[in-house]
Length: 426
Ligand SMILES: CC(=O)N[C@H]1[C@@H](OP(=O)(O)OP(=O)(O)OC[C@H]2O[C@@H](n3ccc(=O)[nH]c3=O)[C@H](O)[C@@H]2O)O[C@H](CO)[C@@H](O)[C@@H]1O[C@H](C)C(=O)N[C@@H](C)C(=O)N[C@H](CCC(=O)N[C@@H](CCC[C@@H](N)C(=O)O)C(=O)O)C(=O)O
Ligand SMILES: Nc1ncnc2c1ncn2[C@@H]1O[C@H](COP(=O)(O)OP(=O)(O)OP(=O)(O)O)[C@@H](O)[C@H]1O
Ligand SMILES: C[C@@H](N)C(=O)N[C@H](C)C(=O)O
Image 1 (spheres, protein in one colour):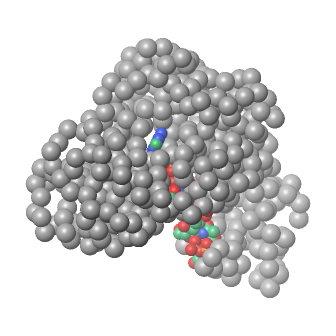
Image 2 (tube, helix red, strand yellow):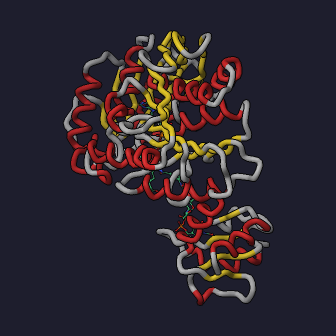
Image 3 (cartoon, protein in one colour):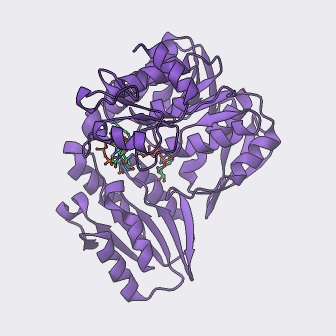
């Protein structure tokens, strides 16, 4: 079957599903292979549950007239997404970077949605499966699309660009994340830079944080650049205050002040990016302000949680050296004399992992804390003067025994550490 023929079927059954556990009647089931299951084995179940068709790549699972046999289901999903993408002549803004992709994406989506029918990535479904699924969710009434792209190795972003065909690009920043797969920080720059390479080759536009020299270098040769930053940019804003929530005042490109519900001054560039996107696409300042002020994270990213008399910055969705440093600096500046740092290990750092954990320990030691609790990962292999635990539950139990009141906590760590479990003990 050609992609055009499959596309005709998709137009009749436009809800794509890759998981029988979430399947609804009339969905088009794509039988992906993963580390745990072979989706082909669920084709029959999908059809029994009411799927219109099941797209499979193993003939043994064929069911007459109801399965569509292709060479490779994942590639077919990606090709179908590209075919769908080509039906739209609207801005497609792709966002990548080491830190802040999801937050920036959510803020931009909120701003653009006040003026345009805008489709975007759900959560952070930003990989080789998530990007095509996101595109296939875009309906014919779309006026804007905002696509998040994550990556942990070279050529990955390039492979998403040839599916999403972005007209606009935004790289939030390049930091020390996924060092293992990218081969060091220079490798991260090259990998994330694949987005700007695509934009350059296709005469598209970029949004650029002007404070970062490396982004200026990476965007060389791109004619259409709209900038944001703390000085010398199209949109200029600075931190008015950040304890506990970030407030931004503007001196150029935007009238007024924005009071966010985001913890941490490290969210400044994310907010400025959303303002820049709004301005570039003609959204008025009042709507931009209202959209950003209404956004409140509920996803363990930059969240402020109150438990009894204790206050917690819950930033446990993920961690890497750059975001850890930003979060610690922010917490160090916050008011309070009963501050507890509860940090889990950082994953996917390869041969730089031990050194990065040591560097972080030096960073922690620069500030004054009531106590520091380091949990699991390569913290366990690093000498330090702080409290040490193997698991978040153990750190939680220690904290519970202290019977703390009016304390302030920062909880952060890599996804695999599940540091949010500490919250159950406070
Ligand atoms: C393939 C898939 O979608 N798997 C999801 C599934 O996993 P599960 O463990 O159950 O099984 P398999 O993957 O082995 O299953 C194969 C297929 O069989 C289906 N199936 C299984 C059982 C059953 O009863 N019925 C079935 O139909 C199954 O659905 C598969 O299609 O379920 C899990 C739980 O819901 C999902 O977590 C799993 O999803 C995988 C991880 C996935 O890739 N999902 C994408 C939609 C996605 O975008 N996920 C994002 C990833 C975000 C991320 O981490 N981004 C990184 C950078 C990414 C680099 C990239 N190269 C990478 O490594 O992924 C970043 O830094 O931002 C997310 O999870 O949030
Ligand atoms: N601009 C930034 N600079 C440094 N750290 C940031 C920035 N924005 C967010 N962070 C940190 O990264 C964490 C995750 O934020 P977010 O989910 O938006 O990033 P992400 O790049 O999308 O990560 P992922 O792809 O894993 O979801 C935040 O909770 C915060 O600690
Ligand atoms: C959750 C995943 N997108 C990620 O960023 N992983 C890093 C290594 C983490 O868990 O912090």
